Length: 252
Image 1 (cartoon, helix red, strand yellow):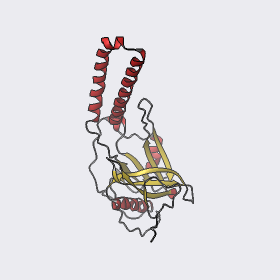
Image 2 (cartoon, one colour):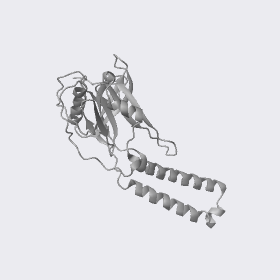
Image 3 (spheres, rainbow, N blue to C red):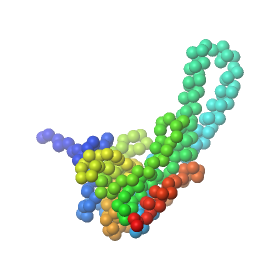
Image 4 (cartoon, rainbow, N blue to C red):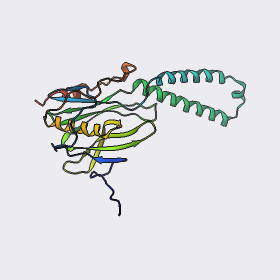
């Protein structure tokens, strides 16, 4: 008997797709609503933080020690007999290697000290809008890593679950797929919850968001109440003033 392969109704299908979640206006979703984490929930807006599965502890200390070690080594190596007698090609190779190592150290330091922790998603049910706080970083640490606020209409968003199989990121992830109005053609995607081990948690979170945006009664106490530490004030989430006000208020 041939095996029937499942596929997403959304186009293009997300990489590592696992399942499409029920339509957001379906009041008979099989999983009870449940928040995993929450910063705020009231009659106008709800904010869900998104904490990445990254071990931050000690990263900035390692990066600082590495940079100091590199500078110490370079200051001694610059005047050594070997360097002065090296060929031009050897000197270029040494400088490239030093720059590469410094770039890696700078990337780790920037990740540890400057990347905001728990970048949030805000749901405003009075406006029927979703505000996604995105910190756009690059593998190139010398570039500016900007913060962008994406604003979507709730009616255009569909839920989907993907399966992650990385060494340090195994489990399931919940994403919001933003489609062109009235279609399943995806124009953008955003992560609503980073990887967890149980798909039921993500189904419950999706149902909670759906019911909240329909003014239905939902539980307000999240499953997890402890917030991971931020190492410096530079890790703080800072909303632009105009969008911060808009995302927390009802239209006039």
